[in-house]
Image (tube, rainbow over all chains, first blue to last red):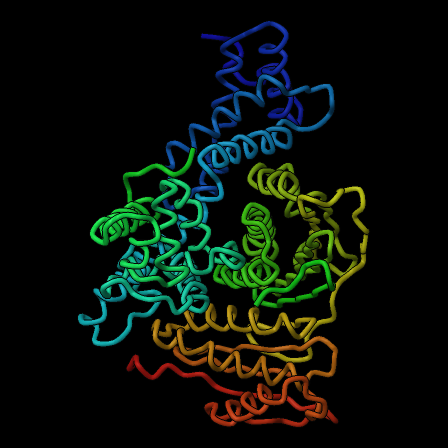
Length: 267
Length: 279
């Protein structure tokens, strides 16, 4: 329907494909030919898709990332300056990568990376517990990968994340034997100087910003300073029951922020 | 353990076969270095993606039918990290930017690194050099080190690594041994116990290293990893005596530990087996 579709009909050169691309750019940028732009998008979409896949995480649906990459591709198509002598691909890739990174930054990059790793670590730990009785021993990494439909490398990463966390845990008091509280204690206890070195610490540190001043104060007194609920009650002037409730609520909220599937990260 | 990235230059060299599974080992190495130097997650992400891309090119395109050697070397300086990915395959024509797939790979490497260079070696094979600078460093201050390549380790095995300084040995050894064990079908319990062995070896190395790079080699069969490390001198000066004695005691508890002499140096060899899984 459009002559541009018949790619390179008049050009007989070994670099036909590249000339075509140049021709398409000329049609779009000099003459505003929308069809030429569409063909360029179609032609380079595989590149955008490939880049999106490289940046896929445990959380972002791949379609969202492809979408973001396409925006980068469109920007690149509109801004490409063929007279500079570089190929379009070498111009487009940094533009697309930049767009994907900006997207992660807007989502709160610092939360993004440890979040997905930590989530993976929890999934893997959970799967270990489930598989153990069936197999009669600890599972292999391959068995975990198969069970969770993950790459072997992802499982290995999760084990490394868990090992890093356990080895840096502090011996903080447990709250009624609740795992969530113990985990929280570990990370909040290390908040002052060590926490940015720990994935989970960074995650909770970021998530803790979503708590109120009072919630943070109570958590700090309980887990960092190891004070009893009654002592805290006296210090901040509320009943011990209220302290107990604040602790329970903030631990639950932190749990949601860190591992939950509902609450969005920091914007 | 954390090291200050500004105080020394760290050098690591990894030699593996150009198999797809080797990419996991390469990324384990990067992870160990990144964690030890507390590198920024975004920096690590660029490094991991670009180096994976370069290694992937080697795995897919460097050798015609069989696999061949893949060497990844890292130089960490106060400015950033320089990476050299080397193969001894057919040379540049295979990663010509004209082949569209490869074009994307090269563009990714170029986009994520500060600088990238490709070179075909006269004797065959290709070098990909990439420079990654830390965010607070002026890229123009990059020193060249064009011909920098660490010496190969003096050991042989499926996975051969050379590390300097010795303080970087513990994280690199632990991470790569676990990755190798995972690939040879260790259970997660077996993998969790590996740290005790590698920590003992690393602590021993800290007292017995001659100041040159420390090498280690891993060879794997199903549920079995053989670890050789060295060369070590006789332990004379001990920085932390308690720790050293503890390490020596641990070393002697290792499964089949053996010291082999090599001139005036010696090698430590041990075997890690996961007996939980019956064949």
